[in-house]
Amino acid sequence: MAKILMKGNEAVAEAAIRSGCRLYFAYPITPQSELIEYMARMMPKVNGTFLQAESEVSAINMVYGAAGCGKRVMTSSSSPGISLKMEGISYIAGAQLPAVIVNVQRGGPGLGDIQPAQGDYFQATKGGGHGDYRLIVMAPASVQEFADMASEAFDLADKYRNPVMILADGMLGQMMEPVEFKPAKTDEEIADMWRQHDSWCICPNEDGDKKHHHEINSLEIDPQVLEKHVNNIYKKYAEIEKNELHFEEYNLSDDNEILCVAWGTASRVVKSAINELTKTGKSVGLIRPINVWPYPYEAIAKAIGPKVKKVYVFELNTGQMLDDVKIAVKGKVPVDFWGKVGGIVFTPAEIKEKLEACF
Amino acid sequence: MTTELICAGFGGQGVLTIGKFLAKAGMKEGKNVSWLPSYGPEMRGGTANVSTVVSDEAIASPIVSFPDILVALNQPSIDKFAASIRAGGILIYNSDMCPHGCKREDISIIKAPMVEIAKEIGNQMVLNMLAIGIIIGKTDIIRYETMEDDLTSFMKSKNPELLELNLKAIKRGIEIGKQ
Image (tube, rainbow over the protein chains, first blue to last red):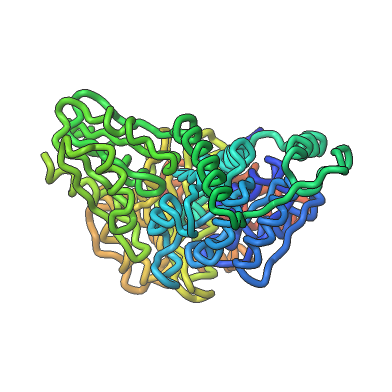
């Protein structure tokens, strides 16, 4: 298929539909509104359901219901809207249901602004909702990756019966880049995926065993039962931590004097700075976590070459992933941080200046 | 080779479209491209700008801080971005709406009364195609044929007259760019 020039918001929506997503519930918010607009336009064409809910709280609970029925379902929002969904996300994780949630982050806290930011890292990777649960969190850095992650997110959600979040930002949502899509799943393939959920979903499809119905619930009033339930979920998370580490290595070598760690949009700006520094003979490497939960602690530790005198973390927040990098580095070398907030994206020149000062 | 452009002007002048067509043509010619608009609570008549990168290599940051080319359709765009053009870079501006111009001497400057020329061609809306033509005439980022194929593919059946005006505007731009 030929490449198409598309906004990230539209590309992830198209890729979700191609992956068999036939239910989408959301409430509009900038800078992700093109996503909901695309779904509004395209879902009816594939006999899917698009519904603009009266609020984000309502949308996520519709997702909960649809996921319980074993269907591929998605919602999306931007930072303040994602906060509203957090209760529902905790319920979905507790009930062990697959769902995909897209967060096109903007500046916060509160209503903040509508420019790109990475301030929801803690919320996405450390909780946000209540209770012991984890989201698989994928952080794209290009429009192509944003689109590719839609189908991966649905597959992972199904595989582990756990909600998956794609953590993008306003820049990835609004920018256009060439994107190539995988072939769309056929109606038969989609029906087949649904059938595979018969063993747990609330209402088996036409071919399924209708004598059985399953209970979807996140309430376990007996502490002994809840303990077992949470421990079971954590066994699953241990598997995810083993299987789903995903990261990119950029310009890593034994000559590196600085090792950068950056994710999403921030990583692209860091790459530009590294390219500039390479021209002047200064060797800087980058590790980009692609999944930010589970987190590639070991890969970061391994990437610290013999000449590395500092690990430098760059984020569009006040240092949220920084904690994870410190856990990975274990005090072996100093860890420094620089970030921008307020929805301002740092420039390659700014990052270059910060790195140059280390030589 | 990597070319970084900023196109800026009033909202409604079609600056985002200039970047979009350049990116699309670059993509069709097998290059890596990115298109990053400014966005915000703005409306028609407000300011708009777009960063476009066309490159033979993978594009790291899509943010353009020091453009190789600036297309300025109004004076505020020159005031805001002209100082950041790389030495040896190109400024293309619409002299109908840039009364103060630009005083830099280390860049090539192409000025044209774009509003007047677009009106002459027959429709003010083709101003952005005129700008694209100037870029094609002055540089080799993209080819005229790619633009012609692209415009023809979606405009020929819907609005053949507008297609002709657009192509005419690009050709006129190329002449200006070559001077």
